[in-house]
Image (cartoon, rainbow, N blue to C red):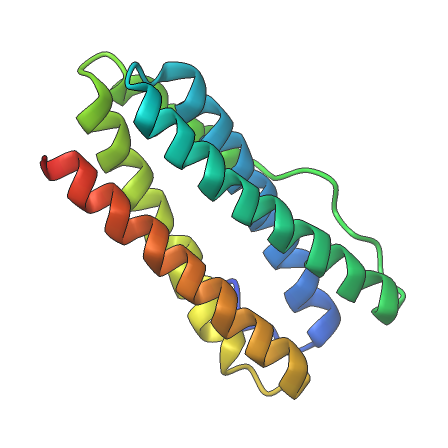
Length: 148
């Protein structure tokens, strides 16, 4: 799925849409934690979920500075991200991690776009680049764990 998140023309809408995306991601991470059997994988996914929660905290701070409402939940995409995980759980942990890896593609793309978005301040662009690196680390680990 190709995302347009990160390409918004206003900083306010960019922050709001990233928050929605992050809430969707957190829901998928929680669903993954609940379905994985391997305790080490659960712990790693919980660590990554913590990264997403930190992103929400920073994006919420940005929204406050901008004077815009900070979304507190995801949107209908949450059903897609958590649904993939639920279906994959029928097959097992490796399939769950593969499903989560596909979810990371959209998040990585959004932060890549956001880090280059002229509507964002240079400080925000730097933060978005850091968030992109987090997402890339998550996806790399998931791909390796799913292949093992």
